[in-house]
Structure formats: structure tokens, C-alpha cells
Image 1 (cartoon, rainbow, N blue to C red):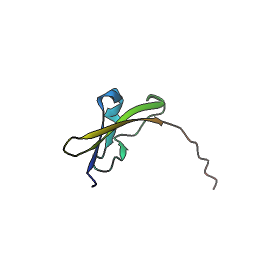
Image 2 (cartoon, helix red, strand yellow):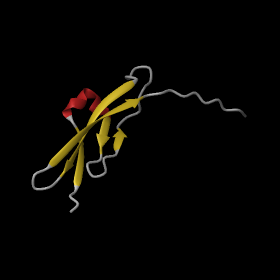
Image 3 (cartoon, rainbow, N blue to C red):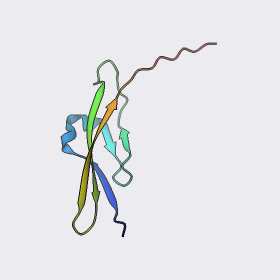
Image 4 (tube, rainbow, N blue to C red):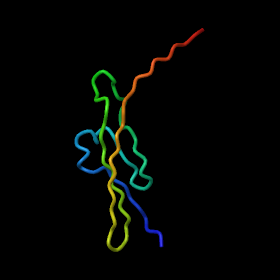
Length: 77
């Protein structure tokens, strides 16, 4: 039997999770604002918890590392 799974960013993610949101049904993590490569951290550490919603819920937590990279594009006309 398949049970519905929900997702959440855990409190262990710290203040950095304020820059991210997670869709509780799909687990897709979105960025809530544009990052500034000059002032924001280069690396973010997030913890995502998956919860299988059965009579006695089953949980699993994974660490997610995200890197901010700057790319320069030269436009030739």
C-alpha cells in the first residue's frame, strides 16, 4: 500500500532556510529571492525531511548542499 509522503525543511537548516521553500507534496525546493554573489554565502546547507503519512509516520532526513556560482556570458553581435 502506498502512503502519501510530505516534505519539509527542518529547523536544522538554520537561518538559511529563510531563502528557500519546499513544496510539501512534491519535495521541490525553490529559491525565494535572487541571490547576490557578492554578499550571500557561496554554499547553503539544507536538511529535508520526508514523512510517510501512515498510522505511525515513518521519516527520513537528507542533507542538501547548494552552491552559488557566477557565470559570465559574452554576447557577440
